[in-house]
Image 1 (cartoon, rainbow, N blue to C red):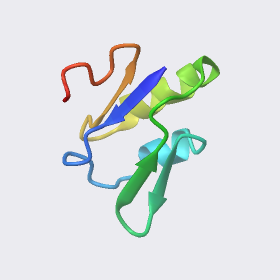
Image 2: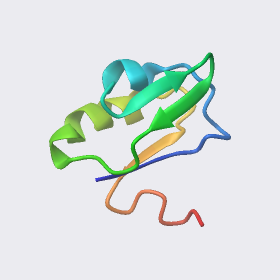
Image 3: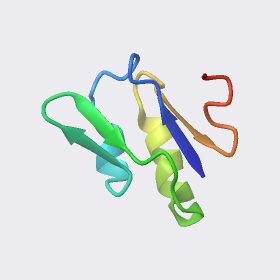
Image 4: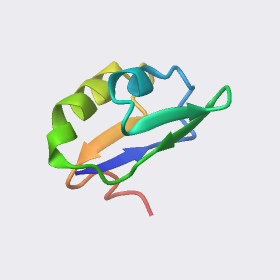
Length: 69
C-alpha cells in the first residue's frame, strides 16, 4: 500500500501518528515523517489515520499520489 501526505497541507495535528505510529511520527514540533510504502496488514490503521486527518492531507491505496509529480 502506498501512503502520500501533502506536507504543504499538513498542520501537524498528529492524529495520524496517534492512530498509526508505525507509519507516522512527528519530528520536532511540526515536521511529519512517514513511510510511503506500508504492508497491507496496516490497511485498517492507515484508513483510520486518513479519516482522522482534520485537513485531509493523507491519501492511501495503490493509486495514492498518482496525480502528484
